[in-house]
Length: 216
Image (cartoon, rainbow, N blue to C red):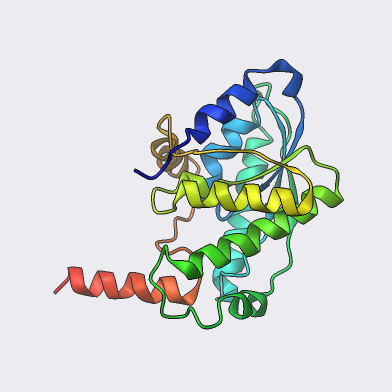
């Protein structure tokens, strides 16, 4: 069993408290498809700012494509007349060398292993620092939407960073309540680019090997 805690219920409880309405959330976003449901859901209650920091996307053209899709999606959501808050955006630095340094020695780890934990920490630490510097109430990540990511691991790392930085972590398990299913529907509705690997060259190579074995 992945989770001992129901992180989505914890988030729902926070969103049922009117005292939290309009509070500012900085959410680390990995890509537009994962953002699709998360942003639509959160903007009904919080003032959301997307922070795009993904040095793990080691191919620059891929990085730029994902950035533009993220910005396009935010632009589309900000046109909606649904009473939700306007979504803002912050560009993180593109620094793949920082990612490679962080995962040095873990190049052969499988997806979901220790290399990924280092990568999660790197990205969430940056998000936490920016949230603290800019006086946000919470920070979060869209990564918990993916059924391929360990929600418990992500929330534990988020809470660790929260203690280190001194800002509140917003717990989540966005894949619940049909969140992942809804993200697929929204990706089709907005014709979003859906990549088939997490971002780094290691995950791309593992995905290619899996495809090759499947086609044998």
